[in-house]
Image 1 (cartoon, rainbow, N blue to C red):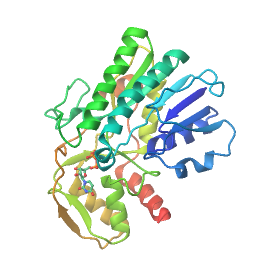
Image 2: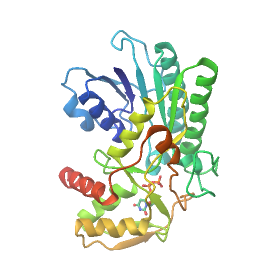
Image 3: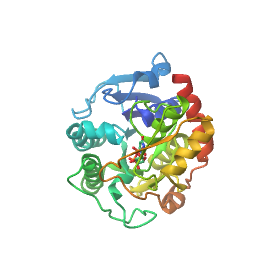
Amino acid sequence: MRIVITGGAGFLGSHICERLHSEGNIIFCLDNFCTGRKKNIQHLLDKDYFYLIEHDICNPIPSNSLFGKIDQIYNLASPASPPAYGSIPIETFETNILGSINCLEFALKQNATVLFTSSSEVYGEALVHPQPESYWGNVNSVGPRSCYDLSKKAGETLYYDYNRIYGVKTKIVRLFNSFGTNMRPDDGRVVSNFILQSIKNEPITLYGDGSQTRSFCFVDDTINGLIKMINSDPSFIGPVNIGNPNEITINELAQTVIKLTNSKSEIEYRPLPQDDPTRRCPDILLAKEKLGWEPKVSLEDGLIKTIEYFRDTL
Ligand code: UDP
């Protein structure tokens, strides 16, 4: 197949490029390197059937002769860590809205299937737990996370309506926290921060009292979920939750990372950022039923691989 991956040099995008290229597909990796890194796809650059195109999806995607007839589009382009999108909120909003429209218009011309990576952030400060897809969420429209939460939410509407009005084959995935190799060391997410701080025996920056929860899915499982979703029956457009239902407190995560790195680091408490969700855990019944998907990698096994990666990068 001929496959476009927007945000292809990012954390998740680079894993999808690698995996689908190794399976014999022709890959077009689009990235503007806003948060993505050439380093993540360096090893693919001189391979046949892998094309890197520097492009900001806020501009229309040209249907040029290089692309030929595209079969599938993964739209993963967007800053995704709270410090990253918080520092460029308007660009983030544009990427999820204008970028989505451009991906959808491209899919319409190409008669391709297009997958949108929405987010568990659409549930906001959830009042239902764990969160099923049927829950509409509780999101603040005027806060530091709003640019991401609401552009992902409105993005879903675009994918829904391009399907309803124009018959575009769309797929909507709500990704919960994911982690693994190819994460930026400086993107400020909790897993990368804690691992780097532990390896260096520096203080662990724990926001709030650490009782807030998250559910962390290893990247291999996340990628499997995305691939299963784009190849699922066209009548199923989602949204579908992809995440690991193993819910832990951020305190527990800190202790696990300290143990696995054999670190001397101590916890340093910092203020909880505004609108930081208290509890987050996916209900994955729909993914199990419709995609036959569930995560396989345990938190500890995933962390061991990620720790190894960060040790190497240091
Ligand atoms: N967090 C923390 N220390 C850090 C980074 C994050 O305690 O150095 C907390 C953050 O407040 C949140 C959780 O860890 O409660 C997950 O944060 P992350 O930025 O990874 O993703 P989020 O799920 O908030 O989008």
